Image (cartoon, rainbow, N blue to C red; front, top):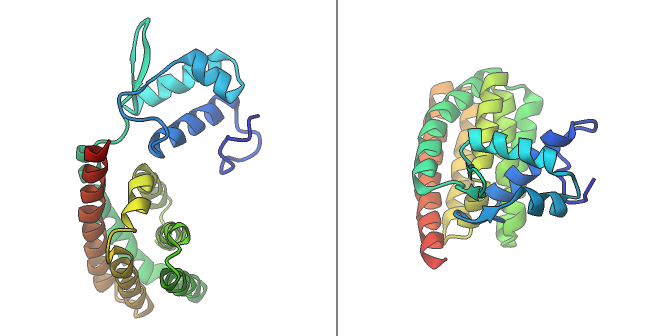
Length: 227
């Protein structure tokens, strides 16, 4: 296996799934640009596999509408558009508010202690302007909150939506004042959960997701104009 494969997949995962996960990750991270053509042969060489798992992976990605396959021409990356980002955050604002409300009711004291530690570390890294760690802390905050909701369906749906906009979300934290605002919004969600106030947790999380959406979309459009 090539060292570039995602380490998040469990050992024993079949080859097609691993190839799919790697290509998908490369598309969402921006390694392949929207409109860029990719071929079975080129990807197979890059990933050190035969063309068969690449072909199957591209078919899965076509179903997900991340690539468009034209017979005898190969695949073209469609990626994530501004319209997709708007849709993702509109869905997230509804479902993530629900997850926060549930978390306020279901979270254990240990869950709340872990969430508090993440917020404290976010403050630590913000003071040092360590944006790579800020992105990591942001991801951990949301992933833990999804788990705290005690709903497998919410956790899986939200994790996937969160990953779709990972690249732009991380870069947008560097926008002036956004990292500080995001920290304050996370703190408000934490305070509501600690108080076991589900309605307030839902309100704070919905506001946070909506504010993030505005900033991410603005950054995405600016990056598209700069290409």
